[in-house]
Amino acid sequence: MAVQRKFSAFWQWLKKPKRLRDYTPKGLFGRSLLIIALPVALMQIAVLWVFFTSQWETVTTRLSEGVAGDVATIVTLYEADSSPEILQKLTQYSMDKMRLSVALIADEPLPTGVRESLFSVLDRTLNNALSAAVDAPFWFDTTRYPAYVDIRVQTDNGLLRFLAPRDKVFSTTGHIFVFWLIAATFIQTGIAVIFIRNQVRPIQRLADAANRFGRGQDEPDISPSGAREVRQATTDFIKMRNRIQRFVEQRTAMLAGVSHDLRTPLTRLKLQLALMEQDEELENAQRDLREMERMLDGYLSFARNEADEDSAPLDLSQLLQDCVANAKRSGANIEAQILGDLHVLGRADALTRAFNNIIDNATRYANSTRLSTRHKGDVGVGMVQISIEDDGPGIEEDQFETAFKPFNRLDPARNLNTDGVGLGLAIARDTVRAHGGEIVLGRSALGGLSVLISLPEGQLAQGKDL
Figure 1 (cartoon, one colour):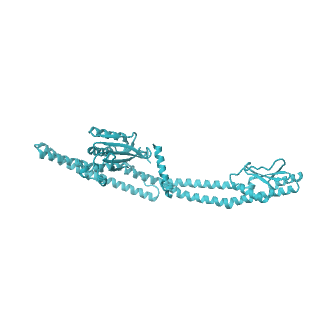
Figure 2: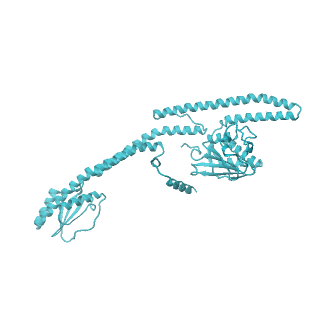
């Protein structure tokens, strides 16, 4: 399945219209490296092109023409007088003055096979030089001997074979220049990689800290580092985090105090009503008190949202199975298809509360409910999706977003908060988003409401730093 998903994603990418940004790196490190490496590479290519066209090839051409002239001189002198004595003198003279080894091969024909050099320019320049200087048929080989070039010329008495040192025919220092140019490019790129990585690392640490803080995870203090702008951004993030933490703590403390202060008179009222003679009006008063107490608990839960609970690696498969089992014990008709080995990093009580709110809502207004899970993306590094569908009356599409607003009650067609204070879905969405996920409503294939929850899994979900 994973291979099929990868192939499908690759095929979709191929069919999309391509723009330049589709081929450029997406990360800051890759883009910074491209900004430095691309101009350097283009400059080195231009330098190599100029070197080969205007310098190296020109020098090689001049050397080849000089050797061709020496070969033509020896051939001309030998054809003028082909006696053994003259051949011996020519051989000695060419070795002493021209650094050419000359030998007569009387019984061999001129070779016809061609062995091309790795650099075709070598063969081309030597062939042009010999063609211009030598009138007789010739053949040469630049690949057989590492240090020499084999040149053979047809004469009336046989083949004159010349062995010329390679550095006399071609410029042999070109590859050294190319080597140092490429080596310098790699060294420069390596230095750029080190410096760019050091500049990107503080940005990555800041992004990871913001990501973990946004998921409600404990974030150890980070110290500003890197460039001045990155230090400023880190300092501002720390100040913002502290302000948000103070706000949450103050809000929770305030609501906890209000709840505590209100519970005392509520308790006294409950005690007084319990001592009075029971009648219908008294039962209504007691019901109102219970409703007020339940509303206080809901307000405090919404403000706190399990903020005091620490995040930890969770077995999401087992957590969902427990939620389904609890619903079945309450008499709910719910079918579950839960994949095994689903893991997230989060707060168990908060997620349990969110799933229970959604499952209770579905089973309360429907005859049957279905819960299923699936992967989105690669297993272990993508998202896990939990779908909860029912066959109840559902809600109108234009009410989907309204259903998530705190203290909101929907119309009687499907009042999700009839027994509550309008905080069930609000708490569920806050919890899911605090874990880096998302929750959306939709139409169910069963005819009712569909709630799709997405939560990240993978390295961060396993408690590892990205």
